[in-house]
Length: 172
Image 1 (cartoon, rainbow, N blue to C red):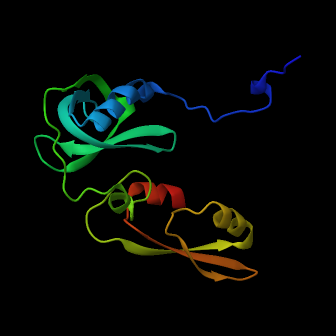
Image 2 (cartoon, rainbow, N blue to C red):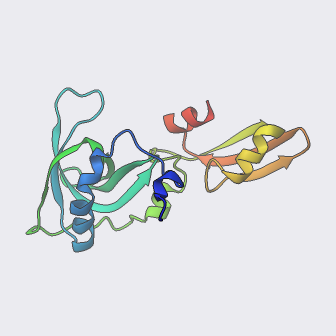
Image 3 (spheres, rainbow, N blue to C red):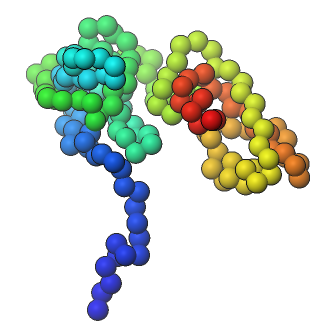
């Protein structure tokens, strides 16, 4: 008499997994080194725009999948949420362009979440009461979080990150 495992283990469920349908196409393009073309609907824009991307990385953050790659027309690296992509098409006959300096660890080193930023990273110092301290110790806000002070009343950490809306939202 086997028990249904779903009654014993629950996984986080996302409100939408719409972007997951594109994972295999994007992953194959990354692995096989060819660009992809798709329409993309940015938040706040009324009409989607067509893009050709030379894909470098798939990254999951906060339950959503993101594609990081080089814009064909502009030559810079950018990020696209897979759930806002439509009509993806593999351009298997074209050569992939590689951005010589792209390294995922360096690219996201001072980022908070998926948002990258222009300029220098800032030192952000955060103070927590002792009740919050245990949570922050076991689930750091950022991989580069360092402890500055820990007492029986206060826990102080420092992050070297870019100032982004994602950072503000996490703090608030």
